Length: 256
Ligand code: FPP
Image (cartoon, rainbow, N blue to C red; front, top):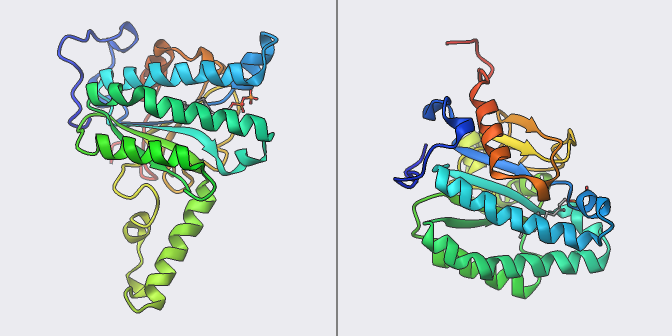
C-alpha cells in the first residue's frame, strides 16, 4: 500500500472484511468495456453508454481513493479508437474534457494525483489544456494516483521509448550497453509509476487490447461479465478479494 491511507472512519466493505490489507493490490488497472452493449440493451445511442460509463469512472475513482489504493489506471481511449465514427470520437473527447473540468475539485478534495499517459498528437487542444491543468493542479497530491490512458497504445508507447533512447544514443548521450529494463521503463509514458498488480476487464472479453503491454508482465488478470456502466463499488471489492487469493510467483516457485 502507498501513503494514501484510507479515510479514518471509512468502514471496511463487507466483501473485504476477511481480506488482509497486505494482500490487496496497490495498483489496479482497468479496461473499461461494454458501454456500447449497455446502450444497445436499452435501445439507446452509444453515447448514452459512454455517459453512464463516465459516471462509473467517477464512482470507481472515489472508491479507490477511499480504499487507499496507490494507483488506478483507466483505459479511456486507445490508439485504435480513432477508427470509430467521427461523431463518437468527438463525443468521447467532449466527455473527457468535461470529466477533467468537473472532477478537478474532487481530485483536490480526495488528495488524488492525476497523470495522463498516451500520445498528445491528435488530441484536441481543449482536451490537452484540461489534462495539463489537472496534472499541474494535482501534482503535489500524495494520495491515489489516477492515471488516465487517452490516445494510448502499448505498442506505440514501446516504439516511442525505443525512438527516444535511440536519439539519445545517436547523440552520444547514452551508451547502448547501458540500456537495461530500468532504463527502458524510464523512457515509457509510465516513468516513475508502478506496474499494475491487478488488471481488470469488464464485459467478458479475454483480451489485453494493446494496454500497458510492458507493464502488465506479471499482473493478475480478472475478467467480469459486468458491463462497465454497471460496474459498482462491490464489483471492485470482489476483484480485490479475488486478487488476494492468488499466489503470485513472478516466475519463481511458491514461498521462495
Ligand atoms: C469501451 O466500450 C469503452 C471505450 C472505448 C471508452 C471508455 C470510455 C468511458 C468509460 C467513458 C468516459 C471515460 C472517462 C474517463 C470520462 P465500447 O464502446 O467498446 O463498448 P462495446 O464493446 O459494448 O461496444
